[in-house]
Amino acid sequence: MDKRLDQVERRCTLTHELIHIERKHVGCQTASVELEVCLETARRLIPIETLASELRWSNCPDELADELWVTLDVLKDRVRGLTPDELALLVATEAQVH
Image 1: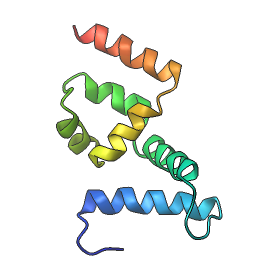
Image 2: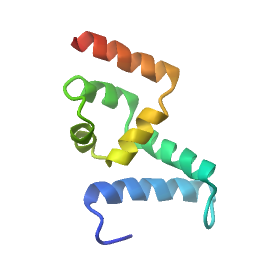
Image 3: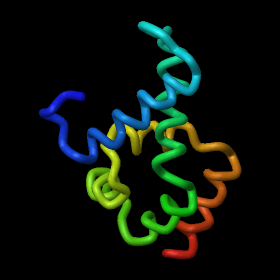
Image 4: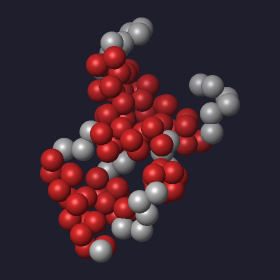
């Protein structure tokens, strides 16, 4: 692992690479496979309940990623991969706040 990565980056990278290992990926993967691994990484690192809870106090992406202990890219992947039910939960959470 690259020693220049900070702890959050190492956590995200390690999870991403472990998913590749679980799926028995070897070598470079297609863009679609990489996307699925990125989305799974985000799901594992950011449970929807945690995301909903943290959104109650912050909607600033950088601050939210920091609080969730993930990179901004992982947070973006989590939002990109929301299921309709997860999105409904977040909308309901937002409505409670306001």
